[in-house]
Image (cartoon, rainbow, N blue to C red; front, top):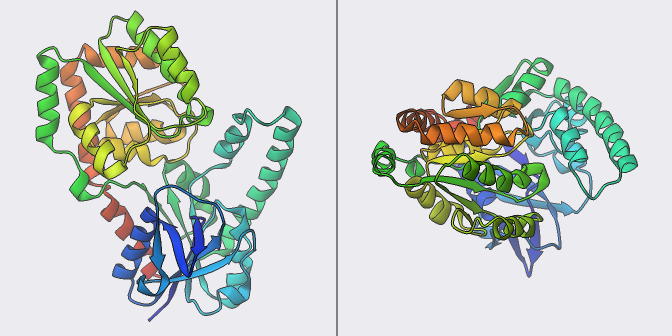
Length: 387
């Protein structure tokens, strides 16, 4: 039986003989052990930092082996000698040398990739803490790592690309390339058509249009556009509620905007909540549209997760949402940064409730064919072809 090693950037911390791990990461690793016919292990960097949504585990009680290496230590050939197949992040520059190692040792190597070079450079220039010279230096360094990345992908045995942009950018670098749409919406969390119909009837009876936004409230996520969009909706005469879930550096600015522009009856900051037990039930029962201000082209899980909750999506036409919107028919895509056009799309939806209901049903249908279980099994089957 072939052994599988998952090299991940997920956080880990040793504590009195136990290991603290991200709960979602552990759930994912359990699925590997359930579906893989052979021993499974993960390799993580040990850190002293604390992190949210974590739990302490007895190493001997986990169904997979946990290998910890010192923080910032590069994985050596001797660290992976005993494993037949290696699954590693291709986004993390620290792992790109594995292409050379596994090519020499004839071990099978699959890289996972999410970000394209355009997104990496966008992230650099959206960082408010860096001066222009530092941004230029970071860009040159990133371009050099991209050359390493493309060479490593050519040496590997396959690529698993999360999202349309990554697949389009790297599929020519390796013949064994597949695309998947990562998300946390399992079949049991999917909305129902009855829930969509119930909200439709409420809207037809005069209920307010309800929008939702979730995630890190940071400039790179476009959260600075939330208040301008809300103000434009007021100017359009649209009666709405916008519920914002999450936290970040822009939270004080958003709160100030709510107060300064008298939006207390329309925009609500709800903080960080549990995804499965709080956010998903709220979205399924109390929302109609997910408001996305994301300008980058990374494959945010939020798209599929919102669609799985039966929500239409109004967002900027970055490379990911533009293609996903076209494929799914689940919402509206407007030019990047055009807050007035994004507000107009939402106002039009409020005035065409039948179209809104249709797009919500299309969102749910698309998400149900790309549930967490479906996408995970797709990836495992790809790995099994290497055995």
